[in-house]
Length: 247
Image (cartoon, rainbow, N blue to C red; front, side, top):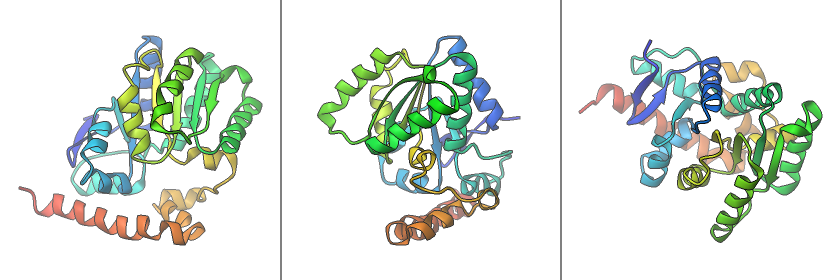
């Protein structure tokens, strides 16, 4: 089976969750770095008019389908894909792997209280040994090099970055060469908010039928209506053009 396709000029990996984890674990064993990224409908829409974001995404080593909208779009365009690999689920699985194999993690992002709650959650659930370090995601560009030095000195195997797009993608692409000692660098969006309990995640049945976005919209309609309603319409138009108006 083909494991990578050209999806709207994005080299998308057609991998299952298990295949993705195995690929990352092999890289760690070989002491290599994996730059991981996920795409959803909103990110695909942003990429159309943001070359820096697009470059940051396509330069990743693994790009997974985060949302069901991507899975459906891939199938609509004639490709086979078994499942989505949601960033938050992958992060959870990798942190469990860290516990099993004595790897360590650095958590960067969200408010200080939130990231501390995330670290406490995983310290209790697994062990403090998996925590290499952490820092909140509110920083200026002139603080970036200090943060990079902090990460490098903590010697983590995994770096999870929970800040908004396109900032996290650009940040990781910009500094991945300096972070070469880190085996996995990965953007995880709002995952820390979910893990800490700040934001509720949609029930599993809503995730499976592609309505996770609607659950989030209902929680924060004023902030999310433009992102989801207008953004999803733009995504549908992009996919239909790719299917029926190929150049």
